[in-house]
Amino acid sequence: MHYDIFNGDADGICALIQLRLAEPRSSSTLVTGIKRDIQLLKKVAAVAGDQLTVLDISLQKNAEPVNAFLDNGVSIFYADHHQPGDIPIHPNLTALIDTSSETCTSLIINQYLQGKFPLWAITAAFGDNLQGSAATLADKLNISSTTVNQLKKLGTYINYNGYGGCVEDLHFSPAKLYQAMVSYRSPIDFMADSPRIYKQLENGYHEDMCNAELMQPEFSNANIAVYILPDHTWARRVSGVYSNKLANQHPDRAHAVITHTPAGDYQVSVRAPLNNKTKADELCASFATGGGRKAAAGINHLPINGLVYFVQKFEQTYTTR
Image (cartoon, rainbow, N blue to C red; front, side, top):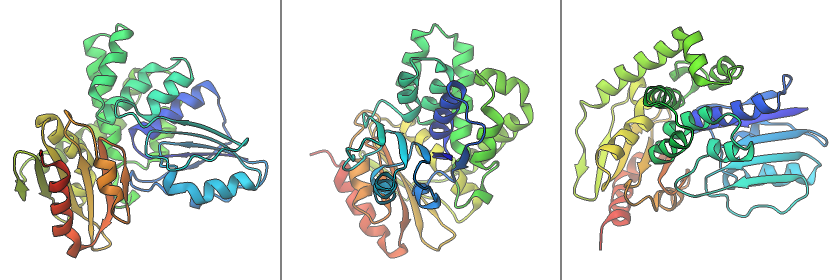
């Protein structure tokens, strides 16, 4: 049996699209969820002889099931760009891990496939706010500015769709969105053939961003800004893409966008300054439910009474000395 296990954001979805266009597996079982649902291997009951493809979720956060599966005869192909912790050395594991702040899982898969479906990789890179990496690959392929703009919008909208407190917050479940796109060798063809899906994502994105842009920072200085969004579904949906927009608008400043969760605590999205893509992973990993990568990271559950401490530590992390 084969399992495709992938993050529900643009990077995870587009990485799997590339792989399945190159290596179709019609009977594969899909395992995914909202953007922050990263301990996905705990949902899998693989046995000896099974195969797992794991994309865009932290190996460090899934180390226990990974090691157990490997010891029990399960084969794993693992591609990711988050901090991995100790990567097991095992004949059943193929690990493509690159934690560079300028790459993402879809770019790693694009390289692995020797550039077979680069438009999907560009789409994902834009979704992950890797504007420079996406533009560089587009330039190498001599893609028109009109097409680049279309890919940028789609990547942003797919990424936006992955955020929420639960799948019900999303416009489309990540699995259904992946299934709607996977048969298209080009994202441009998908957009042309699926205007209803595209327009729902586009309209939802703009409506939610209009709400977000009415917000004022709870705290800000030259180094950081902290935004606390209200306890609404739109706020949970927009937290990631709004964080990216703030980072692009103020490239010398770090940003934290904090939203209420259905569990009664906070979820935190952190973006390092675009001109200094460091320490977001270290900051968030110092909290029990945190993690991510150097440029962008988050905390899934921050207790209400832990907010002041987080802001203090956030400021310390990005205060220029």
